Length: 243
Image 1 (cartoon, helix red, strand yellow):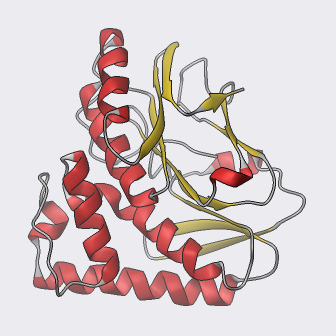
Image 2 (tube, one colour; image 1 turned 180 degrees about the vertical axis):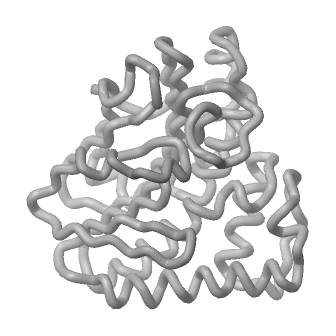
């Protein structure tokens, strides 16, 4: 399920129904990750989560502006791969690098687990990395909007691995300058999907912003599709099938 980032209760996980996969959860500090895999991968997942959290935390100690900047930063060729990926994704979207952190962790952990399980779903604060052999659907949580859990995104197995990320101006504690209930972006890069979701949500402050918001999102190379929900209205653009 996908939703606005850092909605603490995470009750939406109870909506999940993947009888073919085993569900697992990992909580390390402020990182709360839900995993569905073909077998128990919790120990390996914890190792990966700790590795990438430590790399990000260490980099922030050396470069505090990495955490606080709301603008893109220059790529650091000496940085760990996940840091480079976050900086690159944020630069494309025109936001600060931490706008891509949840998606980046989901993607790097998910790809790391593919050697243990052919199918993986990683959900990190509403940002999803998925590799699936069968068609699946992702329900969209949009807070008090009447469209919550009524719109579902169809995920085709041939399109995976895929990132599905959401930003919200009305849900959770993440910084947003917009008022959309949900901006959902799909991309082969989960880091990019996360950063573009943030950038798109920042642009949506009223109903009339739906169309230009969608145009902005899908104009970015690497974005496959976008969905924006504002109160009881929504718009969809690009290669995104809603059911």
